[in-house]
Image (cartoon, rainbow, N blue to C red):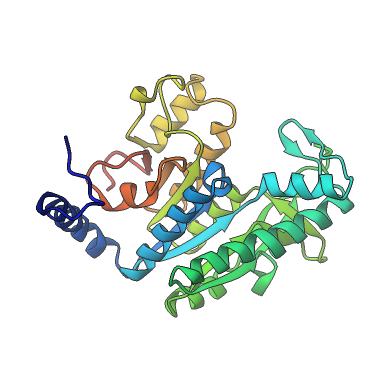
Length: 299
């Protein structure tokens, strides 16, 4: 049986040292590099998982990596819509965002969820700054589709990453909610995966990491042992074409593919339900999710 790293026996201390030793080449490789993390799903709802993500982010910053956090906040939006007697509506999996709903989305994402994450990171010893797409014209939105009939659901028209670059170069951790405005000032709710992917591309990030409620991309989504550890763009597209990647995983994979095509070195789909999944993926030899790269010969 493996020694428990939480006890203070010679075996557990040796295990700690071995873990640190294994992490060293990764710390050296990624020092000074930007890693964009899309934070959502169960890791956002469960308080102990939330604490482990926050610690991972602060750890990354403490060893010289430049983390950038992008978040959504679906469940809390629904809670507040209910409190305000506004019925949440969905069409084809997308939230129907009328003007009243958009006001609530912005209040919840920018005012509550964002500032809670900023506060938790700061309490853990990091230096977080909360932003949304409107700040410094970071993200300019455009309507996703008038024909879709989902109201103020937007897509990314343009990313202006200078503000985020300034913050990370000064050792701050940007925490960004996925609300942005179009050129006329109309606010839009944008899918947080999309914002993370486009921001990673604009920052020429080393990695894009999507925290999800699944182990990664699997040949059989019922069987975690069929996990693909690494795929290139063409293999990922083939898996979409043959139906292996389906449903809600398709936009996530497409988001990764788009970021890789624009110069991000690697994209990862991880199980955010596993404690410290970020550290396991970035700093260990095993890795735990699916890593996507531009081609089989890269990284």
